[in-house]
Image (cartoon, rainbow, N blue to C red; front, side, top):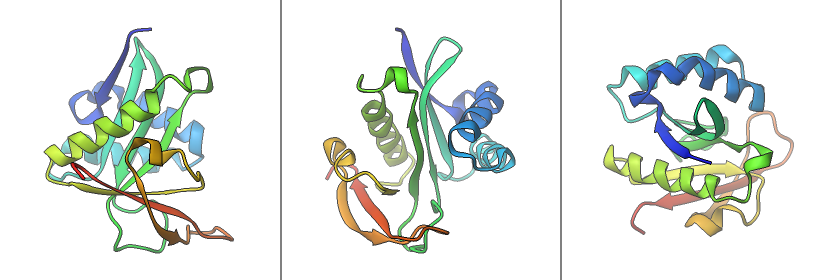
Length: 153
């Protein structure tokens, strides 16, 4: 496997395939992904950003950094969102490498603190994330875990 992590802003030719891939994984409207990814490619701001791990023309995994990942804590921003690795490629370090790459890249863009809302209870701690608090996701019955990662901390 010859995997590569791509910053979508540097590889805009991946925009349509990436938007369709994330839409298929999360069910968020395709137009929302296209709009966010187009803003990433246009630049001018550190957020949003989108990252992919690919092997040739195949997307193995990806994640985004957006202002708010559909929760009530608007003060906790920006947020890592849509973290996903295709099932056959899990447990191979892809998610960890994507998370590390995104944190490093965001720090290079002047953002050294990121937040992440999840139902996972221990996965993100392995990659330097720290539990911060519970937060209510939009449309969810119960709060989810909010994590924080400060680059270099």
